[in-house]
Length: 215
Image (cartoon, rainbow, N blue to C red):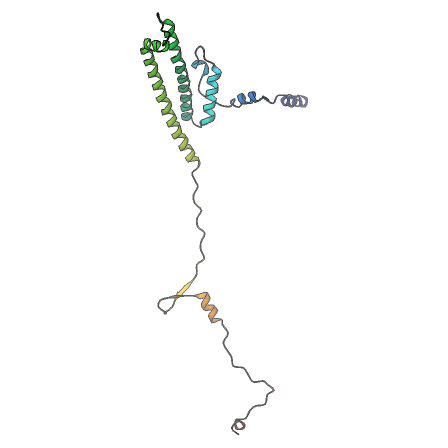
């Protein structure tokens, strides 16, 4: 079990190492958590840099952020196909260089055209590889877009709509007036209106005799 002194020493050591501080170091370390099935060593040939493939894989992982094994496989396919397409472009230029070097009587005015004619079969095989890789890339891209769209839709499914609040019920009763309905509240208000009463005579006023009015 670690003592208190050891724990304090570990805390001090941890404060001394806070990761890269430069802009370039932070740009590289931001890909440390990315995961991919691409093995850079098995994909690299001479004149290729493994760091370039790792950077390419990290860019695709950051762009798509695959959440399932199927999505990760498709992302790896995109990385692999783009890496091959980059290689094929470089091979295309190298074939021309080889044909120009091997030409017995190279033409000074059009050495590239002469080399292309000499390696017509080689260029045809290379173009078939480029076309096949491009088709595979676009199939994987389309399928990945479909899976990503379905995943986003499933994450944004709205919940059930709240039940409407009950409305107050007004009790009404029918009347004989053309089958209409009267509101009990208004009827009760009418029934509660005061009844007019005749004013009573003042208690101190003298009674009036009926004969006095005739005279």
